[in-house]
Length: 188
Image 1: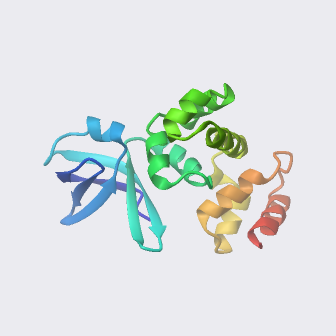
Image 2: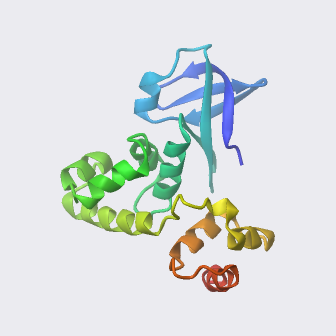
Image 3: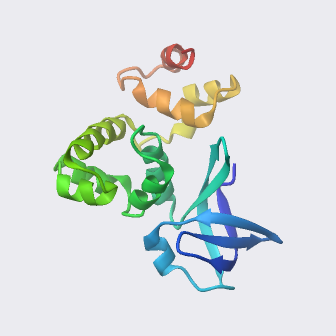
């Protein structure tokens, strides 16, 4: 997984940049907000990244902050949101800001963000609200969770483990019980 890049911008377009890192050019998609703020060609640039694996190939998405990357990872997990939409939405800031708009059920903002009609906006509000409520709390990073580490050692994908662990009720604290519950979901 490519998680961070630093190099020179050798090409800048309306949707992506080509970032040269040690002689290799990476095509990195950026949000319009980020593209409007980045330095010009030949300037040094740093970003966090997400490698999206598709049937037709690989796509790399870039983010100036880890918070935007985390927002993107939550958004991309929703069935109604594709990577391009998730990229633009994540540029609005941390998921908490997006969550505030959702809690107010501000359909006007949601329609603008997603460029969709009222009915579709309501579905997205519902899906994203559920996903955000299930997201792990920042009190204890998921990577430090014993159940998470055990499931990684069993060979399950990290993103899938995060999703599954976020579904387990917070009352379940013992690692053994968490693993047992997670295996029920992962076994499907």
